[in-house]
Image 1: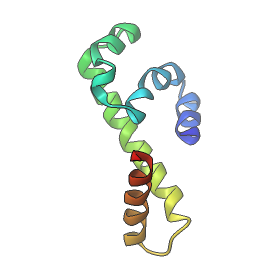
Image 2: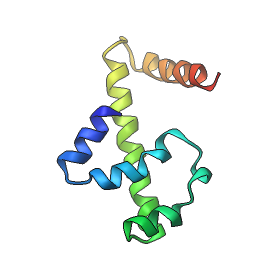
Image 3: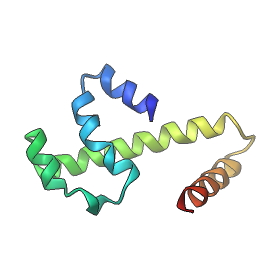
Length: 89
């Protein structure tokens, strides 16, 4: 999350990141897209696209971090499954 935040800040998108980070860690229905769109003066569609891109980048960064701790691609996927199972408890 820190790397993703740093990337956003480096691209002058800190405010966008601050409002969208909730969609990385909670159910999307907990914060309606239109509420965030109003705060950021964006359309709801633009917010959805930005969330999609942020999630994709978050996945890339997470996979990269996990890849440094395992030997094979299959192990990356298993580690991610184990991580999410542990977080769901």
